[in-house]
Image (cartoon, rainbow, N blue to C red; front, side, top):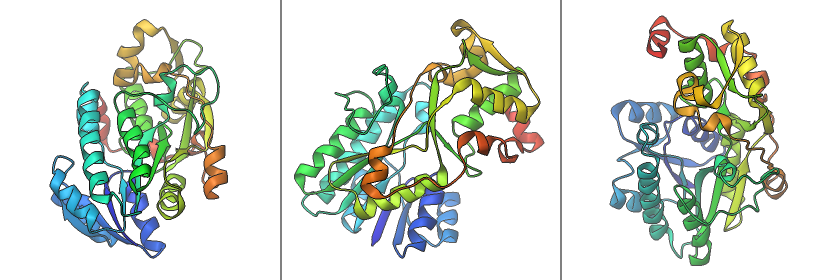
Amino acid sequence: MRVFITGASGHIGSAVVPTLLSAGHEVVGLARSDVSAAALTAAGAVVRRGDLDDLRGLQDAAAAADGVIHLAFKHDVAFTGDFAGAAAADLRAVEAIGAALEGSGKPFVITSGTLLLAREALGRIGTEEDRLDGGPRVDSENAVIAMAGRGVRSSVIRLAPTVHSSLDRRGFVPSLIAMARKTGVAAYVGDGANRWPAVHTLDAARLYRLALEAAPAGSRLHGVADEGVPFRKIADAIGRGLGLAAVSITAEHAAEHLGFLAAFAQLDNPTSSAQTQTRLGWRPAHPGLLDDLAESHYFESSPSARADAR
């Protein structure tokens, strides 16, 4: 299968590309920069230059492919506070790709997040059956699910907020570690009993391949291995890795200790992937979050990286 991938050189894309290639697929990766293009070429992928704002280019690439995996998101825009703007750009890209695939029966796999379920304060473990009416990024999810009625084998993978591995350089875990280095403590809010789900990058990559190959049209899937790790345990593990104390803070002081993650760090987001595992035969096989944090890779950094954290 010839597969067009946005975000192909990013954290998750860097695992999805070799996973697909090793399974015999051909990969065409979207690249914004020369650095990304070089990384994709080295990995064995075909390079397609462009970005999420080039809607015509996205459509042409999708039409020429046998399937599409959409991983890209304007995280740089979202992390500056304009999450709504980043989500709006995502929706435009999703709709453009979907229009090119309409009536083809081709697979279209996009990325969402389990943290969207936490907004609803479910009071229980979230499942693939949970639906949200609308809002930033939810609109992309719902648009893709609706494409199943227009001849697209569409699916959505809701990823855990912590997709962890040695490939993770800019995700939530590295950000928490950078803040701990900056403040001198590994902080958690209140008793830290709120839970975050997690999944290893390589397990997530295999799920994308399975979704591309076999997910039924209109599927919501969960990229989750650990259903819910208490945030205090995450802070404890970061503290051990850095030789710092794990400290409880109040919600009023969350921003100064946790930066842009202050609100996320207080969310309770236990999430199940039982239906996904049954539907696709997906079984997470790599280390869980706490075991991964017990390794050294998250805490190895150059002096310049530590300076950046300060």
